[in-house]
Image (cartoon, rainbow, N blue to C red; front, side):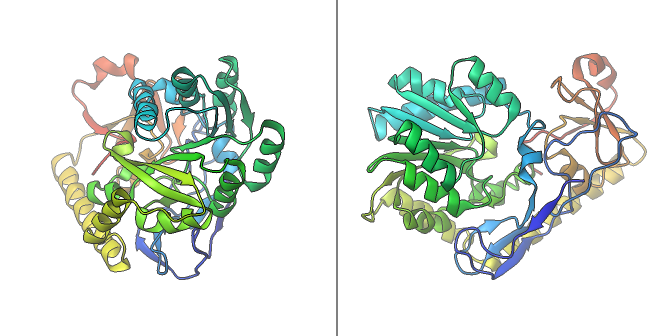
Length: 386
């Protein structure tokens, strides 16, 4: 059983006025796969979206026990994805060209297997250091001589890092800034560790993409925050992190935002940042009414597609393609639990295991390739849109 807590207050402004804006079926957190059918099914945890009435931050309030989520069970590594490796290379180039041509010491939060730091080292020849709580990625980073602390980042550990290593002039949080529960401790730690006028780069799943594209694949327990610039800008400013640059990327996570902030006590106005906020307002992403409208449209389209599946493939078995983190949620949204015969995947860590809903087996894609010719294939990949 995976334990979880229910937050009563907003992650950013601490208001207790939280309103449910997207209703989703309970689901399994992370990649908690079973090694055999006999293992007990894991508990399902709520994953509904809530909006804060005060600062309009969209977030999950049901928080699984993170050591279980990020320890031995966490298998994702950027180095497995050539497109992501190339994206990281382009992000460093973008930062170097537009913001800072010299970096002396770069520190990455959630550094995984160290691919981004490796690129920083290549382009800047800078001193590098990472921190990550996951066993396998940290072991790989260390194997390739990328110094990595195995732990969670927070304000307390930022003091230890600063004392031992000094202050970096660049801190990075790539695709982990949505994962953090205690945002105040994290950002306070960044402020404490980062040198004055140093830079902070983050990348996160973006609310505008989640809403406009109905990105089911990003609706996972790891994504505790679905960030908007409207909410994030004033929060970062509380800790002297002034947003000065933003870049929208379409291919990563179905749509993500890269943010550049500088540590400064002076409020810095940015036309680019204001442009993003204006677009969010125009698209009704800063009101509870607007997000509830999204909930209605989302479920209307889900139900329409569900009826099409039931009508066209009523008596046919279905094969799932990709045992992704979002697979259990997608399966239950479309009521496919008793219709999927098995799932195919090419990740050796997942093959010959079972999904903890319906005991759905996961087979090697290569071995089942010829068997798929006359089957209905339902894509369960993380970049899924409905």
